[in-house]
Image (cartoon, rainbow, N blue to C red; front, side):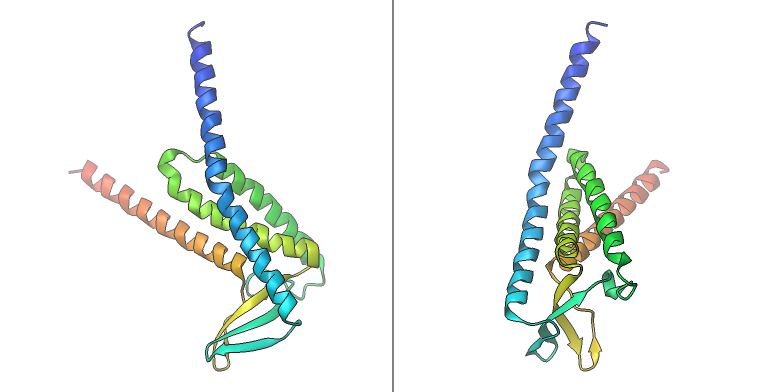
Length: 185
């Protein structure tokens, strides 16, 4: 029994160091994303009034639109309760992502990019919901009358994080399938 206590203490020390290392490695990415998101939104709100649009290219415009819903204005006209729903959802999801970052193994290092981008995007938008009751969107991509929903830095980070996550899952699936095939040969 006396040999187990020092071994357990060493495992606990290594685990704590890994958790701290993960948080120190990936939380700054989330902070940078959320900070850049808030800075760009502050710039847009200081420059444009709500609803204003500045055409930059035939397919691109700066706008200042407020979205009280989620992606693609989902639940935007739900009467106000959605603000608190999306705040609570984002806060719970953010805590989960921080927990996932903390427990990453060295083998899962690429997931840190995924989680940092997603966390930064979620925090950037939840700050807007808490402070203003809506999310400020300002990038508008369109073709003639066909308009893609306006978005912001947080939305872009969320999208990139999800796409990267999908790529990593696909790579893992292909590797597992190749490993199973070679096991049967």
